[in-house]
Length: 401
Image 1 (tube, rainbow, N blue to C red):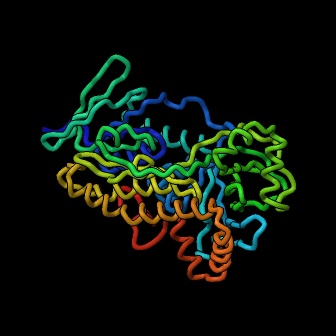
Image 2: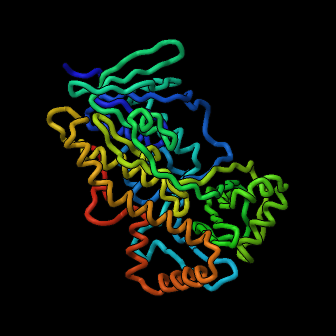
Image 3: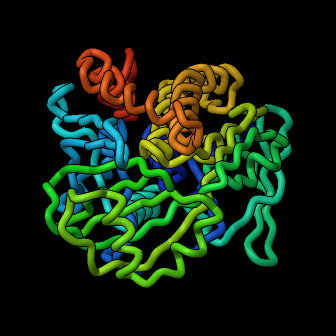
């Protein structure tokens, strides 16, 4: 007997919505469940910016999302990296690798509304619904979901956990995670910046943690500051002028003024990696599989590459059994190197730039200078950071091809 739906996607966030749209475009029947309410309203608030790699731009084009973002995307043509009070510095430029941009910054609410609008137009969504159990038998998974007092059991060929770092799907599958607590928080705030070049992003390593600055439109920028847990309460208690002054001092004399600060938010920084990303009739994507440090802005982009890889593994499936072991094994194999490399890179950066050992700053500064002076190495690392490397279908990914 055919299951009720081919795929149940748990999570209607950015990665979950992208996955549901990709599978629906392959001709599979998809149901999405999410614990939250739909967004509603209109975008346009003063929200954080999200950095999309060129690989993610290609994926959004394949899903038909990119045109809806026209007029709200800021291309990043150059990234300037430096170490406060030291000699280490490097410039990453799009023309070094023949790209139009190293990445694209989009206000988070614009991207979320665009995805949700596309999702509800194409795929059934059960809002305010939780998943209570997953049982497998006879080439199907039986998923029990609950909305209020009403519980229902559905059959599906494949359950996809796209429900974030605290994944309920991962928990129900009994998949353990490996964790590392960096004992840091990221403080995010939007503000106006004067005296800055357009389409340039900055990352600055300071003795108190890295800080980054991304443009999100006109003079408005988003500043991300990583700090030790012990310093969090002090930084949150500062008034806007004092907080802006500390940020400005961290960047040195590069900018004239930081002003009109928005609301500060903060997020604990931890690594959480699932020990496996597949189970019988189930698979994990995005932060449910890997929750990583935000340095390098790799998290969302890694999740969107998961989306493309799973769709590629299921494309042209003649038996209409997306949960078949061979497909899940192919997906896991295709993601192993990317997951491993990104996790190692972000974890190493987090530890190297937090190290208090006296010789480490000298070594990292020497590495930055060497990187800046070796064009072949620079090109290779830029391409990898942009999600464009090797013989990958993500370069021109579309679920129809």
